[in-house]
Length: 332
Image (cartoon, rainbow, N blue to C red):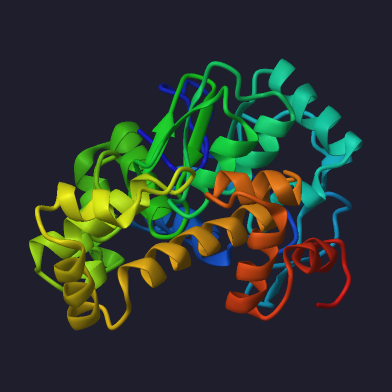
């Protein structure tokens, strides 16, 4: 069972089963709606309220999502003392919204028996609060490197979701829909879950182990085996970049052949592609962690802060430190 929302392995409480959604500024509305809509449709098809939900914000006021749309909250955190389950919904720079009162509130819910989890980057807040010890965490593939750098002691996975007895996590996006459908199936039977899926024009309920990302062949738009294998090696070795001659050797071509294949299939050189991967990862680490700029550079394979800053500025048009300034509320 799973849902980017919580739901422990079994639920023995009264119906409708209540789920709390903590909405933090810039949360992913796509992931939130993907989690809620299957529950709403399940209620309609069943002709009775199986699930209910409440929207919570820090002060009880409206919250604006990353797409600029705003939702009204039902309650403030200070007014919520008991919940069967709570999903923390956030987006970019999740820890920017973590305050001491919010940390205390999450610990109080945990002590009261609430099942806590995160949709999209919500796991960052739970981890920073110390509530994900000894747990396995699923996150969006773009957020995984930042989470691993920020919380190296927590086990992570790129599967669609993870659900334990008292914790859960979800990759976000459409994965929340698959998890909601599984919750419905476990609670109220596979037929109801299938009926809900058909209402959503969702032809297959993906399992936890389904891939988050398209296969490299589809992402790259090429079936050339050597190019695909070379890119896979690059993605697996960002902190300590492999020399191009080693990549060429592992995919059984010469450096010159590798160069020609990349230019032919991807319209860039292997060096340019590799550098783009590293700089994009650095951008995510700057946005989603509080690692020092130099630490970010090292984590992305740059030997010095000056080379990192120079390369980053050439790619984005602004410096790594300006990213941090923007996160703090200043313009680039």
